[in-house]
Amino acid sequence: MTKASDHPAVAAPHSQTLSRGVRVLEILAEAPGALSIADLSAALGVHRSIAYRILRTLEDHGLVIRDGAGLVLLGPRLAALARGVYRDLQSAVLPELTSVANELGMTAFLVVLDQRECVTLASIEPRHGLATVGQRPGTRHPIERGAPGIAIQSSLSAREWAEIASDTAPRAEVETARSLGYATSHDEVIPGISSVSVALRVPGQPPAALAVVYVSGPQQVADIGHRLQAAVAATVRDLA
Image (cartoon, rainbow, N blue to C red; front, top):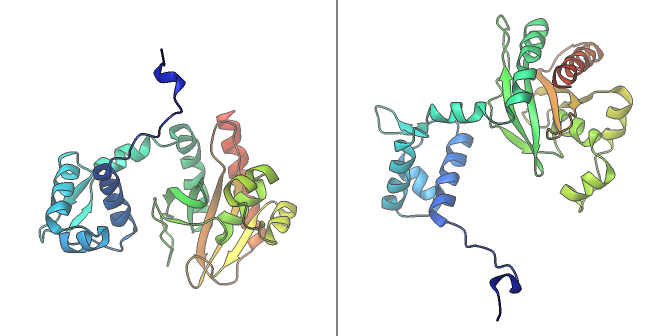
């Protein structure tokens, strides 16, 4: 008698509806503002009636809301869900991000590696900063770009790098970041904006980095790097 276990595993089919619902959340997260149902149906490539049904389900769960004009925004329930993402890491990092942001007068943020992208998990703006740069949670960019990407690359072993980007070599700046203990970038992710970042590796947590962004100008980059190094050290101690 042939048992089911004797047959090769067959991948279960994906849920198209669930996939579309997740894609709606991604589209809204990447949009600069609220979107109409027509905008969303066009982005999804589906009829408005299908987009509407997906939105109604997401609304029922508080994941999206509509404003007075009927435009669609991400809902407050997402914030509650986001707090559970790498909860221990966020709890340890947030006090350090707050101190860094207020001491330097710059937006400080935590990024984690997601496949081949750097994703902002938490962000703190300074209390009294002037002309600070916002960095929204959920913002993502390729690991090949920006100081956080360079910092995370500097923390990866050759095997880890090959697993996520076997088709390309790490950036040349990675060796400099390893030597200095921090990475820098200018005009790479946001035009006219500079960033300094330090890798954060904690067992059981994803490759990550702490970073600041600021409007380009005369700054003591080494001092910023050293302050971020201290924040990383404090986070690692808290998680040990």
